Image (tube, rainbow over all chains, first blue to last red; front, side):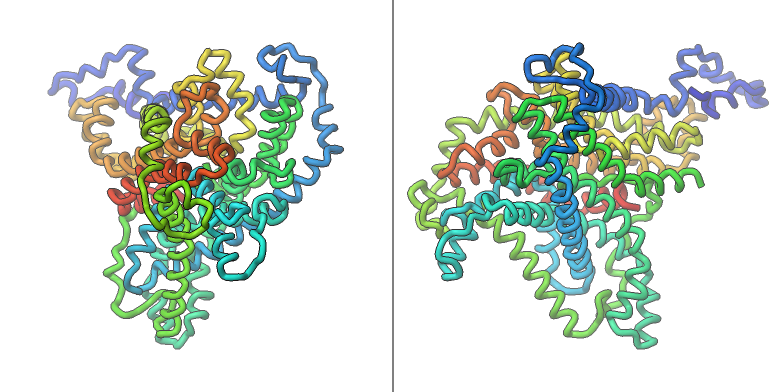
Length: 324
Length: 301
């Protein structure tokens, strides 16, 4: 731990010390000197994260290289099988189907969140009256536990006339039979993406509303004087200013949507079969419903690598910004 | 957890929220013509319906009597609080108590770890800062499903599997980075001269932190606490997999498990959902303004 600036400057001759009695901190013990180092205050959190996050990640790597089943999960001496678990993945139909499904899901749900969220932020930044209610709704849904929004949509999309959506469709005569929203695999996957977007749009709207406030008002004034149309103003003034925010936001949305667990669990449990599982959800299913922990850890490792890949631009930009 | 989570890069923007009133009257960022305003108004109306309707279904269904569930009408014909009464008599109180214990413990641990960390990582030129910040970012990005199994092993090694403190520790891995990344910019906003002055007056770091910095930063602290409290209130993955005993289930797990279990009792399930949403309602009603400054301060630059 590097000594802090303050503690070393204290040991230098201090002309004031001849007049005033030296402060007690001058003769600090080595212990209190270490305690005085500023970075040390972050040590408990770092130690905690290493113990409860980095070490489990290492366990994940280790487990993914072993043959582990329900009976042997607690012991550490499971047979080492090298990359067998990964090799099996390459021929596993559930896994091979989950990868493109995850990518399509991410593209779909993230674009809906971005487009609707940005439009909503623009509407909320307008000078319309009566924005209190929409603003309140945005904050409420942003903080609403995903398991609650999931339960609402599970009810609304129920495949019988009890479900609110089917009740409406039947009452309006649009369908004869209730639609099996959550048990038709492709439809269920689309709906999971939409429900994920429903819950994610408020976050985009909140961040983008703040970003829109940073667009200098004078620029709009100047453009208006020059006779620029609203669309031109959006394209040439608003968009360039908020583009960095949109970039970071997109990265975050990909990462969050990739992590989505609650909606899948509540709406379909990843089924029928594994037909609505993303890669991270498949890691859960393989470990906790098939109890193949070695294989599950291999899927988990693939999920970790994917998330690091998605996070890379974000991490690199943070790193560069710190270095400069 | 997908909903909240402002992940944060070191935020540069510390300026207080600019008030909307400073904008010239009758101008509009979208455009100042009537047509654009009408489009914006219609769009907002659609958004309110898209969010209001499901919330309305939740509340309306929770007041339906059992025999009305099959009819599929949106409004209860003879509203009743029976679902709530039944729930209070059976499962509600233990689940509520578990939720409170779990979220309060998680929040306490998170704040205790994150406040000193945010302070320690601010205003210092130590080269270790960048790796520490990157660690915080990475932790937030790894899917929770990948670490369930190894965390389960770790918790069973230290005898905490199946206990609420064990789940709280696991949840802290999600919220400590979040809290540090919201609080660190707040600490960066304090002038270094303030600490210098405190030091000259003989206040050590703990004293400065407790009696000078934290009172000044109380808004950020309140926002962080509120966000962590609400997020841990709704957190599902870890309690679902680490609590082996039904008596320990918090509301979130109770809801998730019930969705599959009671097939025809949506009124019961929706009453639980309403109860789980109530604290969120209270927090938003109490602190909507503050939440906005908190999330934008901590989130994307």
